[in-house]
Image (cartoon, rainbow, N blue to C red):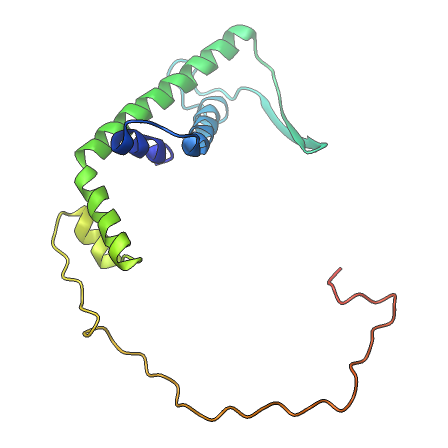
Length: 170
């Protein structure tokens, strides 16, 4: 899911922009946690690498004590790359196979601005969705038009707060 924005750009426009850079950032972060924290690597096994410390200093997160060698660091990087590349190729195949559904969803959003749950289910299952005409949609009763009465004029000035009291919450 995280890589779908980048892959969609690639499929639709044949090129990618910097807009999808966050996709890779999030996907890489998750893949790294899978390998180093959750033990989800066949190569490295069910071992946690690094100790999450997460001390924030001057806006930077110094979040991990490295308790492994350069050799293990290389293997971690290789595992993360393998996960990302595998997910990227699987997501590309899924999006190409279902691109007509993406286009149908886009068309509905462009025309109506919203898509209801039933329509999403219909699109995902390649079923027709009979959208209600605007005339058939339930009408929301408009408020009865009442003459607007002007507010009475204030006769007293607003009270000022003492200088040590702020109207903003602390």
